[in-house]
Image (cartoon, rainbow, N blue to C red; front, side, top):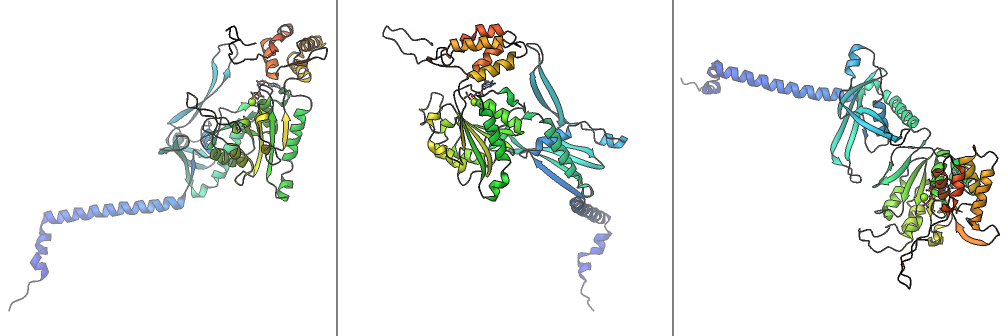
Length: 466
Ligand SMILES: Nc1ncnc2c1ncn2[C@@H]1O[C@H](COP(=O)(O)OP(=O)(O)OP(=O)(O)O)[C@@H](O)[C@H]1O
Ligand SMILES: [Mg+2]
C-alpha cells in the first residue's frame, strides 16, 4: 500500500525546525519583527496620546505677537524647586540689542541694552503650575517680501493646562504695551508689510510744536471729535475715515506735528513716502488696507503722485511710481480700508489736483506756513523763558526779525517778501542754547539762502548762492 507523502514530509519541516540554526534564525527574525511592530505601535500610540494629552500653539514671525512672546520668554523668572529650576534653565540664548542715544558728554558711548532671549531649539519654561515646552525654529523658506527666513515659536503644554496660554498671551501683550508706554511707534512699509522703523521714540509733547495761533487746536479738536464719533459713522453707513492735508514750506513742522499728535492720542504713525523708489499703486493700495491698529497714516510728499515721471537718472531712478489715480483709489476706492485717519503733506500745494481735495479723501486742508511773529514769540519763551523773565530779550529779538523783514514785511510796513522757518529759528536757538544775546546777534542767519541754478552771467561769471 502506498501512502502519499504529506506536504510537511515533502518539505521536511520537522527536519528543518529540528535544525538549530534555522530555528534560531526564525526566532531572531520574529523577535525583530515584533520589536519593529511594537516600536511602530508605540509611536502611533504616543502620537495619539500626544495629540490627546498635549496642546500646541504656533506663532509665526509674521505675527505681531512674535516679538512679544520672545520678550516675555526673556524675562528673568524664579522657578522654585530643585528639579524644576534645573529643567527650566535655558542653555541656548540669543541676543537682541537695543541702543539708545549717547550718554552724557560728547563722544560718550552709546547706551545699549542687551536682552537675552531663548535661542533656536527646545527649552522648557514654567508658568504658574504648567510646564511649557518652547521650540523656536528657523525654516529654510524665506519671506518673499523681506527675504527673511521664516521663523516660528511653538509652545506645547498639557491639555489640562491649555488655559495658561490665555494668561501667557495677555501677560506678553501687557509687557509689550508697557515697554512702549510714553513712546510713539513709527511704522514704515517694508515690502508689503508694515514694520516698526527702529525703536519706539519718546513721545513728542504737543506743546513742543509751535504752529500759528489756533491751527494746532483746530486740528487736534477735529481729530478728537472724529475719534469720538465712530458710532455716528457706523449708524449712517459711512466709511469711518478722515483725511487732512498739511501744506507749506520745508521745516514748518508738518511731520513733527503729526508725530506729536500721535503721541497725544496714544496712536502710532504709519508712514509712506510717496516719492519713495519702488512704491507702486498696487503696493500702496494693499498697504492702506493693512494699516496697523490705532495708527495715523502719514503720506509724505503727496505731490509726488502728480509730477510727470522724471527722466531716468544716471542711478536708474525714474521718479515715483505712484500715479494720481493710484493715490485716489488707495484713499477711497472700493478696496480702501474702512477705518483710517490720514495725513498728507506736501511742499507744493500748486501741484495737487482738486480731485484729491474732496471730502472722503481730504476733509480738512491747512497751511503750515513760514514762521509768524506769534510763533517766534512762543519759541523764544520755550527756549529762554526762564532766563528772560522781563521779556526784554524777546522784545529785542522780535524787533531784530522785523528789521530784517523776516515776517514778510519791514517795520515800516513795506513788503519784504522774506520769511523764515520754524526749523531755522529752532536751529538758531539750539546753536545759542544759553546765550540769548548770541541768538539776537546771529538773527541775520535766519534769512533764507536761495540757491539758483548756475547761470553764466553775460560777463561769464557764475552766480553764487545769495
Ligand atoms: N512749528 C515748529 N515748532 C517747533 N519745532 C519745529 C517747528 N517746525 C519745525 N520744527 C523743527 O524743525 C525740524 C524740521 O521740522 P519738520 O520735519 O516737522 O518739518 P516739515 O514741515 O515736515 O518739513 P518738510 O516739508 O521738509 O518735510 C524739526 O526738528 C522740528 O523740531
Ligand atoms: Mg516733513
